[in-house]
Structure formats: structure tokens, C-alpha cells
Length: 213
Image (cartoon, rainbow, N blue to C red; front, side, top):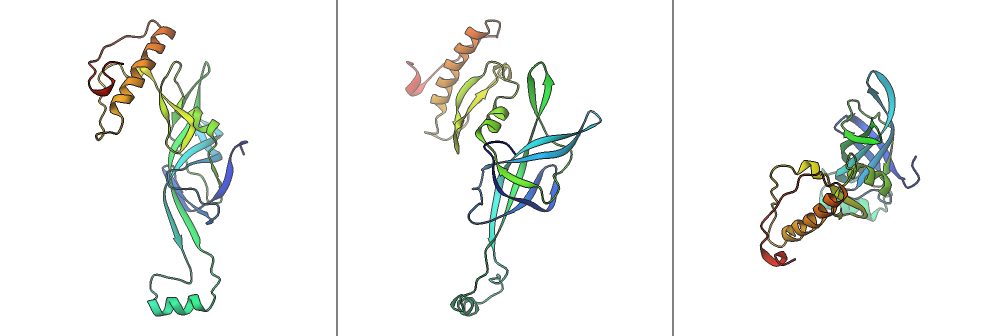
């Protein structure tokens, strides 16, 4: 278990390399879109069995009850509740696997998708900021900082300038921040060019509120 990870549940039911279900409690359950860490999952890499740490994201949450089923009438439900029933809610979450970090040598890492599933009973943790930061900077030597994760202000997000060699479309509704993103991207590109002069440069025509910046 990593230093900043917090236990929130255990994998249950049938899991796959693409996702899994986990059981938790009302007090521990993570919110939708929260990032999760699954530590020590068995994976076969280059013919060798290794233990990897998987990053996943919560896609759905459901709270159920064994006693208060969906087949009850209103009157039956009221009768059970007035009888001081003590059934504890059952919380089941669903998560999508994002991947794991693979060491590519020379200090470089890349994000890969696992080929094997984590077994039921495996602990599920809230992913720490340091673990997330590794994923969002993997393989980026001189990145363009564009902001932070919506639900994790401490995790900065960077773009790899090597992925912007051709065309880039910024699509969002009015007021979503397209101009500001382009402004931040341009400033970040200048810093990258100063750090790595051999990077290819480019130009763009700016419009709107950021045109004079």
C-alpha cells in the first residue's frame, strides 16, 4: 500500500482487464469519476510474471438494500421502516481500468493496458496525488502545462508537444475556456522551445478576448 492511498473497498463479482465491480460502505464510498488504485496485480510482461499497480476510475455507484427491494409496495415499505428495521445499505461501485505504468528504460515510462484481471477480494484504494501525477506526466520530458484535474487540484496536467506536430482542434461550448486554453498552450509552447530549441515551432491566428495577450 502506498503512503497516500486510502482503503475504500474490495473487488467483488466478475472482473476483467477493462474493469471491475467493488463493494464499499456509505462512509467509505468514493464519488463518481474518482481515481482508484489497485496495488500488486499479477501481470505477465515479456514472458515474466510481475506485480503492477493499476489506475482505475469510478464510472457508476449504486446503493441497494436486501430488505427494501424494488418489488415492495409503498405500504409495505412504510411498515418495514416503522418497524425499526436495521438493514445496512449495500454499496456497489463500478470502475473502468485506465492502465499501469511500464518502465521503458532510460528513466522513461509509458501507460499500458493490462492483459489480466485483478482477482475478487483485491483491496481497492483511493489513488494518491503522487500516483496520479506519474500517469499524467508519463513519457513527457518537457510538457506544456494546461491546468489540473477537476477533482484533484494538486495534480497538474501536461501535454506532450511531440503529439502536436500536425493539426489540433479545440472543441467546446461557448464560455468553456477554449481561448484561455489556447493562451496557456501558447505560453507553454514558448517555454518548451526555450528548453528544447530543436522542437518544431508553429504559428496560429488568435481571436477573441485573448488576442492581444
